[in-house]
Image: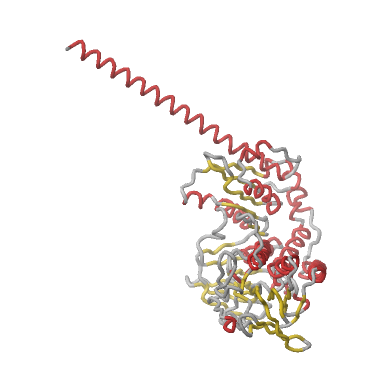
Length: 494
């Protein structure tokens, strides 16, 4: 069977690529391992389940009402894993129906089975009805990633588990050691700490989430510690040992031995393409099973593309969707228009979101910038919602006033960042936020408060500069006068 585009993997990248290609009138085939797996890791093991679990925790613990009703409000005193999983099935089922409906309406042919390359243009699929060979003029690999599981780690899915297995825990542990302080590790660590679990985070790096703004991460760590979380940074793990079904120990290179009821191992992810037989296609993944791609997402075999987590950073569902669309436009010579700046969202508690440069990056690049900040405690909506610890900061150029970065932590951070994204995308300045009228009371009002704060700093700076120039002019005038008097004296003497 011959297709214009064969897609391996039905996650955000593969799904959106299939729809985009079908809209262009192309014949498209998409391959997924099993029927219930449509939607990929995003729908079944990653983004959707973890964020659904997060919402359940916020609701059941009364977290969002903590500063309004104090500890008097709590939806449920004894929360179980079953409670946290209650909504997962219905959300996943609904999203699965949407995906199937979209693919069917757009005429995308779906093949269920394990895929493998037979040649650079041929992909074999082991279906229930037998092996089928699909020829693709273009091929997109969008198989995603899976948790790294080193052979020396004694995973059992109960006491020692990865981020896929955490969703299947039978009960909430009393204590947990999270090995790996990346995005996934921190998100789950704070979720369980919010439930009252004693959580310790171990990471070999000296700084947490290095790609984020330092002040925002400092605020996150401060909140996490208020929940009782412990951070052990700069600690390399050399071994994990299971004592029983209810206890495990983690040994660090520095000699520390940490014991807890459970261990969540989240150190890295690897490409989920072990069975694809890349060699037959002329491809060679890196040591972590990822594919190299150029800016257009082409591999070194020009008609084979890669998109989504399989190509590495930033490994975000939102970015993967755009990558899938970009692949289709490039392959079929269609114009592709998209803004270069992409937002990042971390669904920690509280949530974090950002777009553009951080203060650290601007400092290293010697860019003259100023900061305008708004604290949620200054915003009426922040007081109403009970979140008085959040903040939003705007980084802008001191001379042009153009927005260079937006960073937020707190309730609705992943939503309100898009206001800043829009203004940045069109080259707007901080003056836009000063002049704009926002609904009141809303979190969006943070932008106006932050703009006033930043522009006030610029006003003070201008006053200082004017005073400095006035002083310099006065000194110059005095010096010129003295020189004139000296010249006149010399003339008289002559």
